[in-house]
Image (cartoon, rainbow, N blue to C red; front, side, top):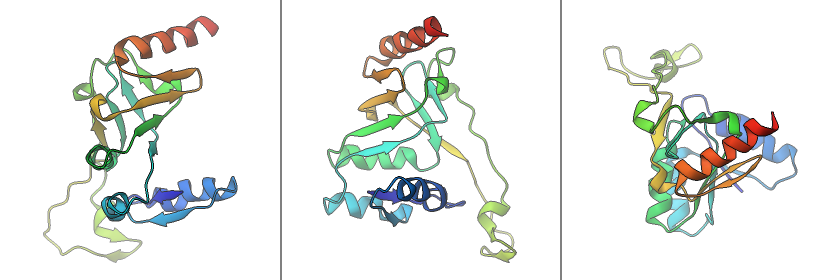
Length: 166
C-alpha cells in the first residue's frame, strides 16, 4: 500500500500511514510528486481517496492534490474510488463549482516550524481543497453501499436510505 503524503501538513505521512500501519497493512510512504512515476511503473492498481464534500452530481472536494491524482489515474487506466461517509454527500449542492474552497494561511507554505522556506516578497496560494469532477470517479463507497454514475440517482438513493433509517 502506498500512502501519498500531502503538503503542506504531510497528512498522508502522519495520519494515513499511521492508520494503515496500526491496522497491520504493509505501507510505503511516497511524496505527493512521486505519484505519476509510481503509476507509470505499474506500482498502483487502484486509488482510494477520502472526501470532505460530495456534490449531488458526484463531484468530490478533498485535500488539494486529489484532482491531479484522479487525472493521473485516468491517464494510466487505474480505477479511482472515493471512500466517504454519507454525511459528506450534499444533495443541495448541484456540482463541484458550488463548493467553496478555503484558502489557508500563507505561513503553512512559507514556513516549517520557525524556519522560513520561501523568499520574502514571494506571493503564496494555499487552497486547502480541490474538486475532482465526477467523470474521473469510478465509484463512491459509503457505509450504506456503493454509488456509481449516474451519481445524481445513486447518491440520492443512498442518502434516501440513510434518511429512512435515521
